[in-house]
Image 1 (cartoon, rainbow, N blue to C red):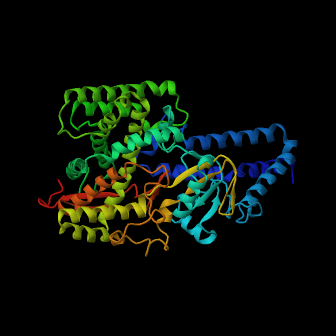
Image 2 (cartoon, rainbow, N blue to C red):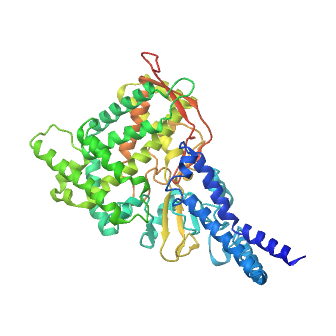
Image 3 (cartoon, rainbow, N blue to C red):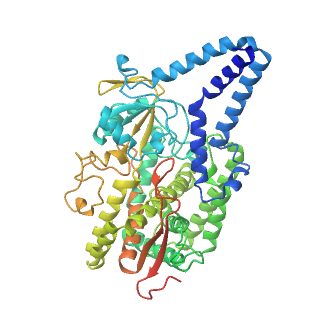
Length: 533
């Protein structure tokens, strides 16, 4: 073999060595192409190279250029590079064995580098549980918002997950779901220290709990009817093409949460101003590395606006006992100085942002189930029930949607090596409690993959069976708002609007949830007029 051929083969081998990285890059690019935004607009946007896909390919380009230049100018190094390459490849293969680490007490499972299977197969974690048990390990999958390359221990069992959180609470670091929460002093409620969490959670929990349920239902019903009417009259919809419901649900949740959290009603000048502030902050694109000096002035303008609006509204409505109170009003009643605490307002903004995204996802899933045969059967039952019975049945419909499709997983980082259930979890590893998959276990539910509202007509389920809004201390305090919004959609579909799926496709994997296809579109028909226009 000639020396040039040896150099060429060495380059090919070393170029293919980081195959998990370019495999992940191709997968991420494929997911990017599924976006409704035109691909060329995304690729040539200024933020593309700062995104994960761009970073992966830029990193690969630098690596390949470095290997090529090294072999071109220093061909005698090919033996050393080959040996290094074989060592790295052997490291990959050893860690990819199911029994890797068992001798040291680690859970079973492969530590494949950057596995993409979890984002391709919605039953991946269930299949792993069936083979390896309720506790196992995998490499860092692409469904983690922050690609950390940390090994991941998965717990597919709610009882074990709760025990894990309870036993090792002081040794766990809660990874922020929203990077926005890193921008303010105490952090989000889910990420706070114990002292801050006790103080702020009590304040927020009381306020959320005291929302007038009739007021909440009325607001949700009005905004739902408006959203469905807009979908029905949209110029983009027809019986052939349908309309994507997500933008309408997103706007609907913006309106609901603006009223419920801040007391800002849609159509008012303050509502328009709030929209301007939120879109200027662009919370979706706030990352861990966003500079506070750049973002903080925008945030401060929003906080000042909310503070001024609340103060002026409170003084103008002083003595009006009939007015409906927002969460911010209820917080102010508990502590007059809370309005001047940035952490209070920042957490409400955090709830506003994340609640809008999560509930939009829940509404989209609810809409999908409504269009299926099992959902239509339920709507027929709900339509002939009394108001109270219809509310209960609709709420159980929402519970089943949450159980099957919209339950979050919980992520914690281990800050010191710990022992749990006879397994050793090393410092720096991540632990994922797979709530959605735990909701599909046959020992918890009969026919767990079937859509069956009747399962919630029986006795209340324990936290070891059903926990769609979290486990242990950091449970979502706004779950009843998500329930109310989805319940309003179900009741409207049962009595006022027909919702039909016009287009659909395979499920897509987002960073926190599986979601209906990006091609999912619906046509809306008014039951009384029978018109879609």
